Image (cartoon, rainbow, N blue to C red; front, side):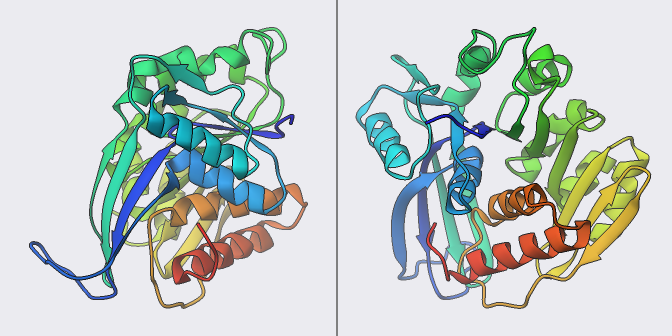
Length: 296
């Protein structure tokens, strides 16, 4: 298969423990523990595939048993894994989270192999398989903040990304600062939550529309800011900020919701709908996801 979008970043195993009860520090409660393909790039790719696109993955996956199983799972989902960097000496990355009825309690991302692989994951964009410096990849790219700060800074000025429609998401608030080099990239759209937006804007705004305005003032070309069940915002340089209200649903999971929002928004825009319609569709898709009405 030939990909029509590239998803660059973390592809790993998500190990998620979920309980239907509210939890606090030290809670010991019954629930379910699942292992599913995950990671920001992977979650985006799976949603894009559900919407009919053919995503290609650029990531690092070990040549261990967990890596072989992960590649097989990606292939079954219809994702293009031919360009994934397979390492002989790096283990397959993992992410572990605990979720309760009151949301995400704690999480640990063991994505050291992706960071150690560095720019090796980008080789297909330079060696002719997906593009070259003289003939760069011309389509959309979903890029996640699990890459190192240095690699993201290199991507911001690299000719390999000069023609791409970049869609950028931080992996977590703790890694949001890594995206600063991409904030003013002429073709980048940033997808962040309110906490991440405030980190990038170096501010403490109380709602998504204000945070979006602040990011535009700092030179961003386009941003989308979410805030859980409160109004979200989409801002464009020279075109102002619009708002959207997420549907009210019972939240049964949160890991991967932002990635679903990003993928749904991209797909809606590719269909040519209006700014408001694209924002509203993305909010509905994210709400459906967190309610547990669709598979992950």
